[in-house]
Each structure stands twice: as structure tokens, then as C-alpha cells.
Length: 57
Image 1 (tube, rainbow, N blue to C red):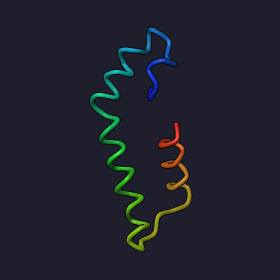
Image 2 (cartoon, one colour):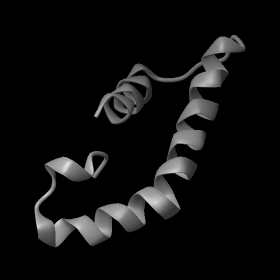
Image 3 (tube, rainbow, N blue to C red):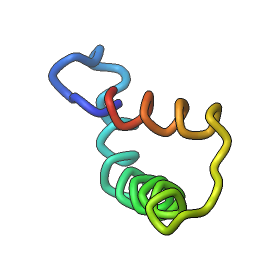
């Protein structure tokens, strides 16, 4: 739901609501998780992979 131009009209309202209320908070959580690695902590490869997939879509 990241790019409104690529959506079907029936999904547009949900996508706008998602971007307005949730996307920023999800991004913040993902960046905090990735920061664990920067600080020398451990994050499972699967979690890293899923975060990067979300960020690249």
C-alpha cells in the first residue's frame, strides 16, 4: 500500500489510512530494530531480511 498510483480504486481509501496512521510507526519500529545491529547487538537474519523486504517495497 506504499504507492497509491499502483492501487486499485477500491483499495485506495485503506492505503491512505494506512499511510497516515501506521506506516510511519512501522518504519520507526523497523529502524529501531536495525539500530540494534549498529550498536553491536544481534538480530536474526530472517528478521533483517523481512525488514529489508518491507523497506524496499
